[in-house]
Image (cartoon, rainbow, N blue to C red; front, side):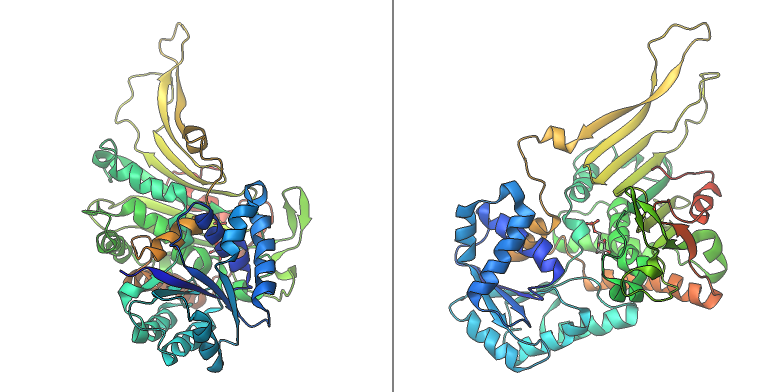
Length: 483
Ligand code: BG6
């Protein structure tokens, strides 16, 4: 591996670049983690000079960094920045970019933070200037396609010029601290593995609730909906990390090989089961975080629509470890709280010897955000003396990551870890082509089934936990969602 000399961001004035990518690179630099001499080049359509671009980036970084902004770190970071104006569909732009990259010898990384419609022209444009050659790498953002066919088409164009080993598909959930901690929890502790299967686990819940609406992205969102936007990638990646077999090491092919086996073991949901196993919802006007908010179709740019902003699915992983264990997935916009959590619910004790005191099953809960913590609920005897004998109560063993690592004052952006891994050419935390495609196969079947069965989203009021059907989905099996 040579040292990366240039990190080029296409879509450099877009929302993701402003909120995540430049602040992440700034923090990596401030922590001394970027290679010396690495140049960071923004590429976008706006006609900006290097200095104008730097001034814009400074504003974005300052806003994100707040009290963690350091003028000294910024001055050093600013020296790395440059800008190449150009239209991604215009072949000339790539000559301009190549020119800009002169003086940045070594590997180049190209980050495509643009609409997926531009992936093909960008890859071809890079190739036309000889920029797609080894060892240069490419990083692509989701969504990679809208279904398996379009995902394959994009992957094939990329593969014509960048080998799989040089292609990094980002799923920012894999950069989240607690998500990585899930790997540590499972494989750095001997305690859980013997219990991590159908014999001890009753069911699993993966829930990603957002309070925000579509945030000015109606055009994009309306094409995708919650299932393509969140389930195909983030929620299925979490499911993979929970359900996969222990990889033999942390190398990319070991971990990704185990994840793809899980995706291929997901039981297809047949058309006739959709009403029982899936719920689609769309928010209507309501109150979110104390403010009255419009319904989905009344959002800026909104039109009448059958796109779901909420989805809940009862999934099964058909293999020896997980046979019969429901994996409930749920995600939605305009829900009452922002919270992403994984709950592993263990089985009930086979026989209770504590007459009269109800027993609650053990529960391992991983909060991904806004708080990062892990807790294990266990039954405990209350310190009281009663005539009836034992009085029991569930208590929680808590591991607050914020408390445990107090010295680490700033919570890292998930992209920091991922950008660093891409710069270091380690693809363990990136999605392999076959993973992305296998996830689409499962999701496509659900979405096609909805359309075939005429299953439209049920309305739910903004600020509620989704349509009533979402509760019935779990209650049907004697379970209920943890909120
Ligand atoms: C993105 C989706 O991938 O993830 C957004 O496109 C969603 O619709 C976002 O809001 C959620 O990410 P996070 O990190 O805020 O949970």
